[in-house]
Amino acid sequence: MQRFLHKDATDGSHTVKREWAPLFVAFHGKRKAEGITGAARFSPVGSSYEAGARIAALTRKLIGSDDLGTATDLRHTAAQRLVDAGASHEELAEFMGHSHIQTGLVYYETSATHAERVNRALGASDVYRRVAKIAHDRFISPEELTLLKGEQQIAGVPHGIPIAGIGGCSSGQPVCPYNPVTSCYGCRKFMPLHDKAMHEDVLAAMREVVVFFDQSSLGDISSPVYLQLQRTIAEIQVVIEEIEGDNR
Image 1 (cartoon, rainbow, N blue to C red):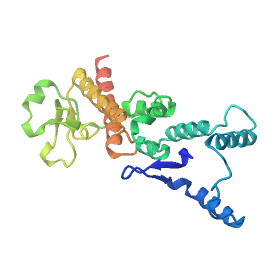
Image 2: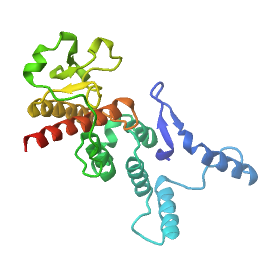
Image 3: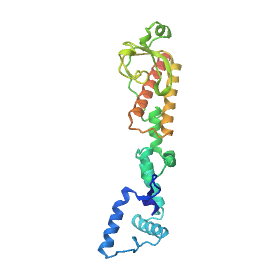
Image 4: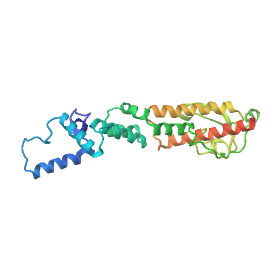
């Protein structure tokens, strides 16, 4: 019965989880049809142990195997499949009835598909590496960067990380409606600094943000911030690869 209930944080009472309500409606209808009223037991099951035994017996009968069958097995399997399908930390906690989103982190640690999504955001997945050349104006040297007007020198603090000196903008930051740094990589008006180490530092910083988002349960792969980080990392990698090609 514990699996069907969750504790109300406001007054300590227990209420039926919404997704299980149809089961109790069906039980109630069955009781009425059988003429059961008064203080009779709501369910014919005498204990939680008996309920678990019945679930296990029925499940094993349906799947024809003893490998999976207990209510706990079904609960863990459902949770793992949710994570593998891309459920967020909040969605998993809601499904499991957890009070804290950190409780279900073990499912993410063992999920190959979640690891792949994080690797894709980090630009570490061979399957999702960008092969197309990202458009940008041209590379510039450190000397050329110093000669640009201040408004053309790109600087910003994306996700709290101060970044400057990555290159210039042919139009100038004041006339650009997008966020500096994260939106510059891949922009045709961007003039990246011809300095591999500089862009590698920015890449490492952006990857740290992705890891932080994932570990703090903010890494919802459908969120605009997460998708922008993924795109920015991929485009930084392209700039680095272009510089590496020039140096060969």
